[in-house]
Every structure is written in C-alpha cells, then in structure tokens.
View 1 (cartoon, rainbow, N blue to C red):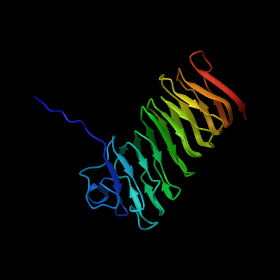
View 2 (view 1 turned 30 degrees about the horizontal axis):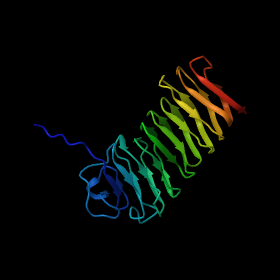
View 3 (view 1 turned 60 degrees about the vertical axis):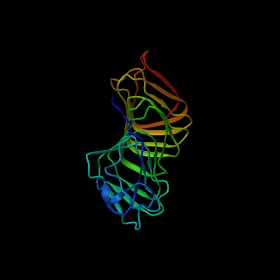
View 4 (view 1 turned 90 degrees about the vertical axis):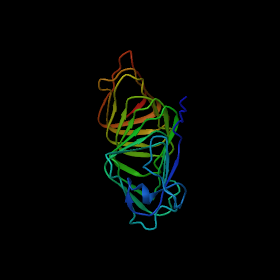
Amino acid sequence: GWIITGISSQDYYWVGGSGNWSDFENHWATSSGGTTFHTGEPGVLDNVFFDANSFSSSADEVTIDLTAISMHDLDFSAVDDEAIFSGDKVINIYGSMNISPLLKFYPDEIHFLSDEVETINAKNNNLSNASFYIDGSGTWTLQDSLLIKQLHLSNGTFNTNGKYVHINDETRFSGSSGAVLDMGTSFFFSRSLTGGTASNYTIDASEAILSFSSSFTPDYNEENTVTINELK
C-alpha cells in the first residue's frame, strides 16, 4: 500500500552576508553558520533565523526577490550587526515575528496567518512602510511598541498588550469572521479607524486611550461590540 509521509518543519539559517532570498544554495544553511544548505527556500512550516553568523557588515542586505515569501517563525533576535532587509514585497508569517533594533526592515505587507497563539516583537523598529494584515484565526500579542503604516483585521485577535501603537494611516476591519482588537491599557493612535462593510467584530478599548487625527467610524450595530474608555 501507499506510505504517506507528512511534511516536517525545518530550521533555516541565513549565512553569507548580502544576497537574494531565493539563493538557497548559498544562503539558507541547515544550522547557524553552517555550510550544509537547504534545497529550496523556506516554506510555511519552516522557522527562519538571522543571527550573529548571518552578517559581517552593516552594509549587508537581504533582498526579497520573489513576489511573496512565507515561513512559520521569522526571528532576527540574535543579530549582532546592523543589516538591511529590503524588497517592498509580501511576507506571509504562519507563526511569530521577532525582529531586531539593529535591522532596517522594509516590507510592504506582512500577513499573519496562524491559528495558534503567537507574538509580535518589533523591538521599537520604525515599520512605517509596512501594513499588517491579521488574517489567521489565532491570537497575536505585542511584546513591544509598534509603528506601522496600516492595520487590517479580518480574523483572529490582535492584542496590543498595553504597548504604544502608532498607525500612520488607517486601521480597518473587513469580513465577518469575528476579528477582535483588544487594546488593553495601550495608547493607540491611528489616522482613522473604520468598520467598512465588516461585521461581527469586537473593539475592546475599555481601558485604552484612543487618538485619531482624521476619523473614527466603527459600526455600532448589534453584530459588533465596541467598548471605549477615552477618545481624543
């Protein structure tokens, strides 16, 4: 009979300084600083690590040369030198994200797609060109302050965990999957917040301070739950 083997998670370590994401033969090692390489780019089950053995110069640059890249965890926490992560493309993360204050990080869209409990640690990085999309049914909890371009919520729970949040442009709900924005005790700034045509969502700002420079237009109909503490 048939023997079906499941696809397992693997760890991918970036080595060799500057290069293109797709150049797995020269940059995606199976261990930190290793010389044995994977036979393809990381996939949705794989954990991606950048660490002290990834870069040798602050001019080193990782270029996303694909339309979109995917991984489980994205972890830059062990990087000990400045580096650049460039390419205004799409990043699909099926786990947690942990970046470094030493990193210059320039993605266009980051989609969070897990159905588990995950964390986002931006390490006070300026991600003002990046839009976050909470698309999975899981829960994402901030570990540090967050500065991004846009926040889109179509599913799952985004927990700001009392951290400072600054959205340069808009915060927007979409769909009807029951997205939750739990602001805790955060100071939450966004140019605008809109419910759009979304339904069945929750905004819990019962202990937060909210500030909007343009508009605040959630839909207060019976399908949605909107609780506000202080609005500036």
